[in-house]
Amino acid sequence: MEELKSILQYFPNNIKETILQAISISLSEFVEEIRIRQSRPITLKIGQEVMVLEHVITKEEINEIFERICENSIYSYKKEICEGFITIKGGHRVGITGTAVIDEKIKNINYISSLNFRIAREKKGSSKEIIKHVINQNENTIFNTLIISPPGGGKTTVLRDILRNLSNGIKELNFSPKVVGLVDERGEIAATYKGEPQKDVGIMTDVMSNFPKSIGMKMLIRSMSPQIIACDEIGGIEDIQAIKVAICSGVKGIFTAHGRNLEELIQNPELNHLITENIIEKVIQLSMQKKGTAEKIFDLKNLNMIE
Image (cartoon, rainbow, N blue to C red):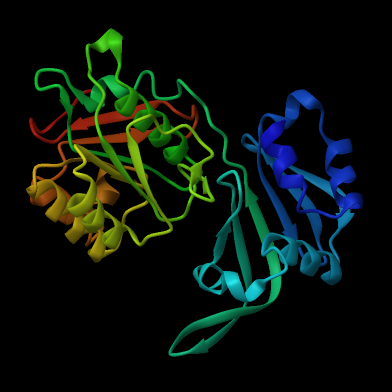
């Protein structure tokens, strides 16, 4: 309920009450998204179901919500707006659609038409069954690992819990604490607010918030001597090049990416480099039916599927 309350503070009172009246306290724990669309009803994504509320959003309401997200300083959030999302306190991401203002590249988004509040929840223990496949117990380190799923598959939640465990150490697996360098480009994993992570990413994790992944990884290696480096949703060629530099420097890595299966990963022209050049040792494909669990695990070093 706390995560939902932190989201609802951005809504006018009448919309807040509409949402609270539509769901029970027990159901609030399962709300994943709140979508606000101009001239259309509010919708809530609850698990695999969508709840449509009666309240139809006006232009004035969507503008008021957007201004609250930007803390009444839209100009200060121009960079994030141009990327199509804003990360708010608590690590929640608000997706934005509207009319693009283009001058060779996107300069702004005007006439906001939709806002998608994706609620970030900290689920400690969510990586319990997966982490044993990430850890290389023989060498007291990890395998270079890529976690994949389509959007909304729980990659960020699982990655956060894995990093917390790697950073704190895992006594039952005789795994000692590791210095973790996290590049949190979208601010969703650690949810750093004024320098302090709002989410638990472990006692030995150093966080670079809002840095481009390719730059942040290189800076961490130069300045913080991480044993493990991590980031969410890799994809660009700059990300791939930075990962190669990191791993060739003796740092282990754990990352996430969009993809339904290993076949899609291989077909991706950028991510394919990590496979063909033997950078990634394990690929963990998350289940869309049961979030936080592995549907398939591929050991690329031995060219086989574990599960």
